[in-house]
Image 1 (cartoon, rainbow, N blue to C red):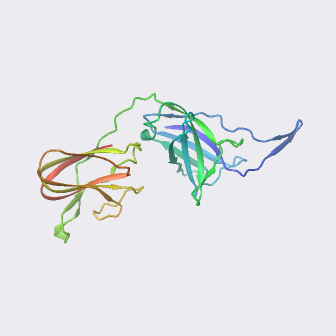
Image 2 (image 1 turned 180 degrees about the vertical axis):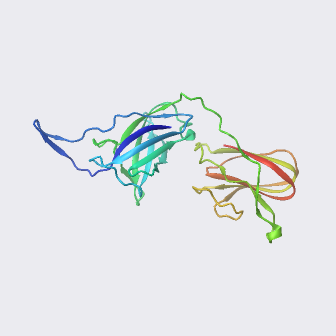
Image 3 (image 1 turned 45 degrees about the vertical axis):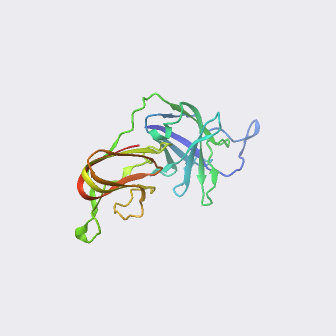
Length: 266
């Protein structure tokens, strides 16, 4: 859901003086009167228009812009998140999903935007022309929290075959969402495997790449989390683990039997 556009400013640290009938004064008029609001339990999209002091939209496609949410009482940072570039010049979007706000208490917070350059340092992006940096944002909990949906994998892609000269037959699930989709701080995952007279090896893997990782069993996008050997197993096999990864998948190398489905909850 969108809450309209908010203004950010990039300008040099110079002072504009304006002359009128009453003398000379500093041109530092505030430019933001809108209130930022985000709702727990929903996906929130906050759009920012970045302008200079003449209110001209600025090309920031090559810039990395990050948002920091700060607890005003403790002064502690709640999270840091990159803004996404839209197709419009000078417009960026901050997407706050359910997981971003899951552990955030309802109330008023401070949020500010910074620009990161090649030296990896943060540089100011102003909220108005009075050299203020922060916005106030209200986090509400008007929507009841719903459980995170369980992910289901009930089909497997064969990525290695002894008939093609590979040393084993290997099957894989698709790439399932890890911590990327929800962004929960604890990064806990529970996996349920449904075998039927299964003998073979099962491997849980994770990936930290941003986009969809490679599907090949030897893809360097993946790393091993745990290997589970099974012998004539027909009972549900359960594993819980803590992993801060964007993607999770399960490979299995069967000698006999089959696996009907895999459920992942995170």
